[in-house]
Image (tube, rainbow, N blue to C red; front, side, top):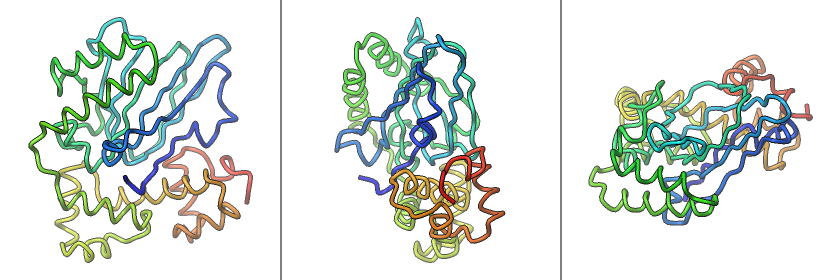
Length: 271
């Protein structure tokens, strides 16, 4: 099981949720915990106005299924790694199911490097073919979230059992170090621990993930800070920011706005 537990905006700002809006996360089974960060659902009933749905970078890749789709064709797609926030304004009814995959092990399920999905929506049937369509069809006919998870876990375990592509060991080990240090390690120190040059490390990340190790470190550090904020164990927002190496306030605010889209004080009621 990974030590990294990314968090999304709806869990941090539950007070902003519309009465007809619901976002939930579900833990994977133990055998998939090293591949799946969580399963999630987002439902919106457009009876009482619009709802903003904020998505923040979490270092993960998502398979997303539109449960309101009338056909399994084009009902599921891959959402690649994000490096800045996005905000969706929901005005029509929505019902989504998502599979959030850790980036270092996503290729063993998706069959392609994560860099393939940067900046574009790739349809699930384009990478899984008929098998993807069959799974989506089962999801669309399922009558509960627990049944959907059962369907998905069966499919993921099958894909892993037949996968013959070796995991990139450098990427995997690099990400484990990032999680262990909660992103608070320089690329120089990371490369030294791995006994590789910074240049080789950067090339590996750009080929496998489509972004630099420095960018991923920033996302992991930011997410680790948010997770601690959510846990409620910090004494103040300033203290937790310093703990995660944000010593320059202007730099911290700039990073926060890039990843979250708001000022830190708008999220936390503490100073």
